[in-house]
Length: 192
Ligand SMILES: C[S@@+](CC[C@H](N)C(=O)[O-])C[C@H]1O[C@@H](n2cnc3c(N)ncnc32)[C@H](O)[C@@H]1O
Image (tube, rainbow, N blue to C red; front, top):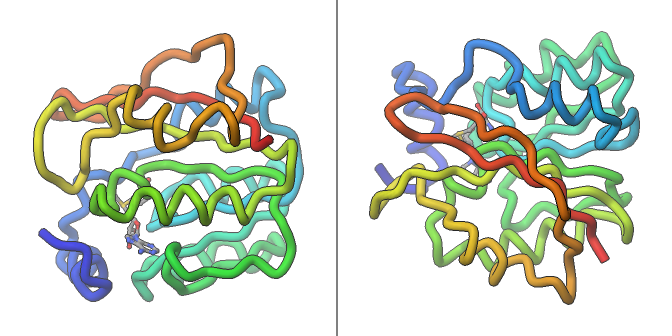
């Protein structure tokens, strides 16, 4: 596996999409239920064919998705069109938001990127969000070397998203199982 753009498209074409959930993540449902996330302008980078963008649009969020795989973009576009959402094709490392977002929903895009691109991606996320905006992130825990998905150890995430730039929450949310012994740690950070 590598991170060449067509490698991701190929995985969709060949249905090698083991990361895909059957339904909306319980973390997103929890954030909607407890008011962490309220209707606003939201970006879902590396959205793939996930269910969350449509769910958010149905919950009256103004949704923009971004992905490098054309067929995943087409899938999101078909779902979002009637609800006023936007599905963009592009690279998260070069995407330039014309207007800042209130929230980023980060679900398994960070862990899909090679670790040496993380700093660039973190800088991008900070650029895309308005001050006070929320980074609703699911940090993938694989406990093993290599990837994708690449392990997102919390100490590494704290170094990547330092407290000088992000306010970390003083509470936790339930971990989300991801099959094969993998799980995600949901955390909602505030962009300073
Ligand atoms: C592991 S999948 C997760 C998809 C989706 N978030 C989900 O939960 O089902 C990673 C996604 O990120 C996309 N991706 C990988 N590298 C990317 C990049 N540099 N720019 C934009 N999208 C990228 C892939 O095409 C793929 O859809």
